[in-house]
Image (cartoon, rainbow over all chains, first blue to last red; front, side, top):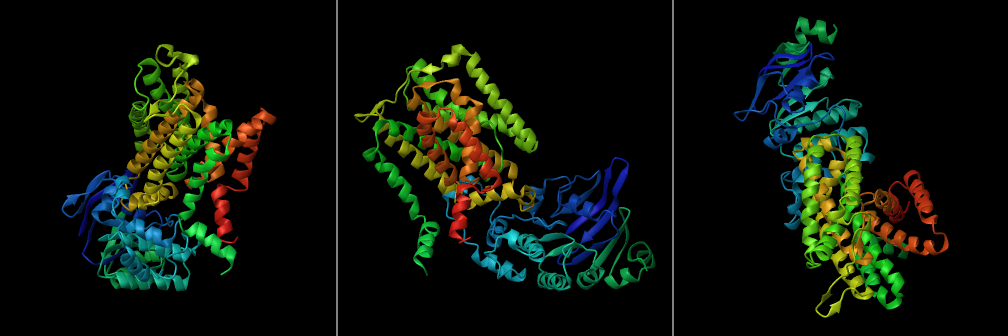
Length: 240
Length: 321
């Protein structure tokens, strides 16, 4: 589905990601964990076009997308959420989802054509993201947890095939984290997902496979149970 | 539901209220003296000018200090064709639109594509505005220099002499309603939300697949073009295209109107520009230098107390706050 080979990102003398090889299988939830500074967010930024790699390829749908713009990559079907939640504070949830659902290539002249009705898609996505009661709420008035759900809902509404989540449960309480888990369970199988998360219990519960990054390189990849049992992982990340 | 609540709903949830100001403006010549009507003509044109600036500043968040430059380009396009070439007054309008669009595209493409940032964009447009203003002063052979290009009047159409106050008022009103109506149509569609969202969080828009550089550039050119249309309509009310129509003071004034009316609210800047232009003419007879002082004071009050402008105030009233 998405294949990364030899991906390297250097910032001067600092090597943030080094010779990374990763293959996302269709429909899997792939956890990406590691201590701070391991290169997790840099990896997502490289895949989504925020950063250009120093070396390596990112192949999606048979094309090397490394170095393309975020807009081009989003339009190819790769969506992302952010560590610091990103939304439009003065807009309602409904407008967020409408913007995400509509064809982003339609520009000013689209005003003179009939406006599409996305009501069904919006309500469906809002229900999955536990926002069905908040469609007419202005985003700045949502709780932090709901703003996180909105970030997820926008990616769902844009009908991405591959979704990259950067700490979707950051700053959430226990019940909100449980809601995030439920949302991911609803999405399971319909999307290919790469999830960065520090809540190891959540990652274990969600992931089909987990990759551990350390100092920009892959420490190990495997099933959640195997990874958690790995002695090196315990030493450098789990602190056991 | 109380009567007040019903009134609130009627005036805010339906768009029928839009007819009220149009009808009031249409009957103004029946109750107004000639002098006031001349001022009102300028006021509705400046209202359109304020809307054009709101597209860049309020909708998409491009803080420009060059609106007067495009307003002046519109005025000079008409004056040059009529005064120097004896051409048709009407030919000045397409000339103004094309010239403003081309210049806006040329000067906007680089800064927007390169994402030079808010501060540098402000400085860049300030430099452009000053450059254009000085250009009109120094290129006497082209622009008439400090004397400007004049004198011109609007022509007679179908036996109606547009150089007279009442006919030109109706021409200006019709022009403003048509152009503003077209803009309102565009900005109240999903495209208006695309611009609003780009201002609120450009990064998120890019990751939703939007080419935000393209949308900003379109809004920028649209804003400049409408500014030039306003300038083209305005020049016949003063008879001369002079450097004062490109002066930074006009840019400052229109920016304050937009802030007082409410950024990104479309109608707010029109109302503020219209009301304050009328107010300026009345105040001029009492305290000639008082207008700018009061305008400055209003600006400070709105920035600190009512940052959402007049429309924000109305919205609070609607929401019962």
